[in-house]
Length: 374
Image (cartoon, rainbow, N blue to C red):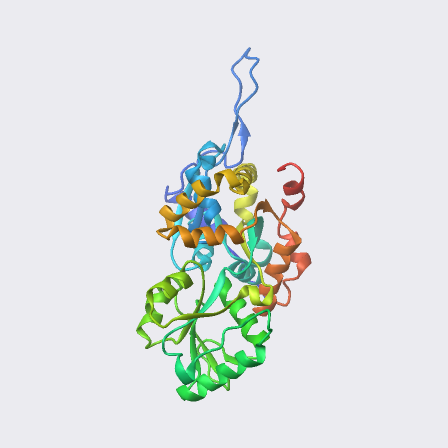
């Protein structure tokens, strides 16, 4: 597969020419400030500023806590926080457009970035690797003779689940419309789940013999769209959107999650090769701030404070946030499970040249994370 190239150097030069990028006229790498003549004090290192784009929702708790607890403020470089809505795909798009230095996202958008841009993408690591955070919710259209059987892992009732999908589609007289944002981590997770259940599906904007048709709906609008019952019959998304739907839509119910297929979500941080080469020292300081944050979040004594911060920031109820904390594994690292999760997402999306080896090679900090960071 021929990969796209990120012509960020051209964008960088253009922005500098317009005078819109602060510091372009200055040295772009980290450097030592010269000491005064006769001074015995060591030179002070300067750091390039960084900008991080993320979603103010479940899955991005580490960013919220790092901000609220002051770990970003204490970091050597200035760290600017930018938010987007929808899914992590929007964060990656902002990164690729040059609007941010680092994107926080899930493994699905990371797989897309690696598959499309190859060596231009640098994976810095992750801060949480967990499961059961991607959830599928059926709407009130799917009740009675159209009801979907929820998967029960203890019974492994895949045949019942498959039969209920087929019966519902037959009763509807058309495929069940499943809303899920294209390109989001949830897309690959729910496709894997449908495959495991033996449920045939039609991909976005295609017709076929599937009993489910995928419909592209922006993640943060899914509960509203599902509530109308006119465009989709069920939804798949990461928290808190499923909990929002279950709490606000009468007759809605949960039918499964990525935990059913032992699939893990990864809170990833990625950048471009150009940004990494220009700001490596600052990026390492950023990763140190994340490590301090995950250590803080792992301490049970701090959990309630962190839950309150996240709940207030996301506008989510504390019960939902607490459930996410119970599933979490806070650690700033680049583990085999993280690599495996990105690889599974890439394989599901058809990126044959994205291998476990290439995903590991995309992180120049993998050894540093194990040694100097700790």
